[in-house]
Length: 261
Length: 261
Image (cartoon, rainbow over all chains, first blue to last red; front, side, top):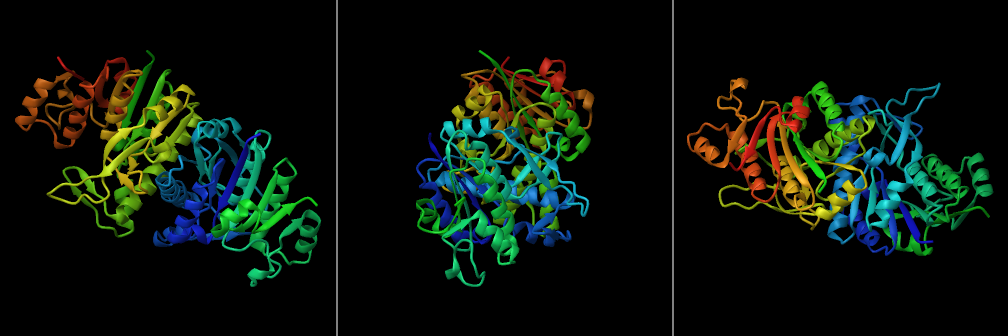
């Protein structure tokens, strides 16, 4: 079974040109199958403000009205995705940028809850594993923007952590799949203000206890929920850590390993 | 030899939701290999104005400074490309949206002239025919945004008519390639104000005469220059006409046929 790295980048790495460039060089050097999933950084918020579109967040998720969907589609699928692809191509990595609409590779549905209307926010229904396998088999590196569609013509804004987790789960029957959530922190921290407090290892039992006692930073919860869900469905290994140390996250010498025991 | 339609849409079709939707339904119905190349419409100009970025045009081409490149990348590769892909997917057409950076499918260089600095405007060097053949072979319909790259990390704004012509030329050794330039006019008009004055046929000799006498509308010249260049390199048939009549352009019952004799 070939090895596959599904790497999610988000947060400050995307907002900082130098950090992103450094990350992409290291990512290019991964010499096996790989998929990059990127978040949006602060650019969409900035553009929304410039265009005087009010931004609303709830539980760490953006409420996506029609104007906001247009902004995130432009920023995530256009500006960020294509600049990452061009940089990877320059580094010799044969990247192809996609959203979930392209090749119908990630189908989703509009999120419906009783409490709040998230607007055009998508929850993933199915990842088209054949599409990704075909690209990987041909030597391409898919670069996935956090936009999906409902197969009825509607684009949907979708959490990038969730997309990375769903892709890893869908491909784990075909590859020894390693899922790397990289961001600006060293990993799961016991004290969010202290980078030294990184946990080398986090089990499900320990996570539930920490979550119950309020010790897990709210922004980490969707990431960790996705991570444990992925682990239960056959993903080989999950690591959360600093994108600047992507090489060490892959080798296992940095970040937090999410494990069952 | 399988048949391939390379269809360019631009102008008012893209700006009008109903026209675009009507066009995409007809395009979906083409039951052989097809590639769609889209222009940008007025959306990029509108967004540039909202963001207070001065817009400059020269000889029908946009002068692309860094801020304008960002705008066109967002609008062309993000908003327009992904909305077209989602609509085609809804119509059962397995579309994949790309720029020239994706899979290194269209490599270009920054245009350099003595007279004027066009900024980040790209002239096409090479179309990666293998990339397009692979997508077509797998049943995908590439949807190409008018953005290319220089393989050194720089995205470049590139004329969509040129991209359509270059793709048709590159694929004509492998497919019986039909190139359709569709826009809001009925075809090449002898009198730009009179839709009835459409030429059913335009030869190179007739074109040169009309151009010399100033009878060809300036905006048509790049399209026609591209068309005749494509014809000389093995493209089977070239038609220019109204996107609303895409079915008739394909069957040969509307538009202007560009021919050698």
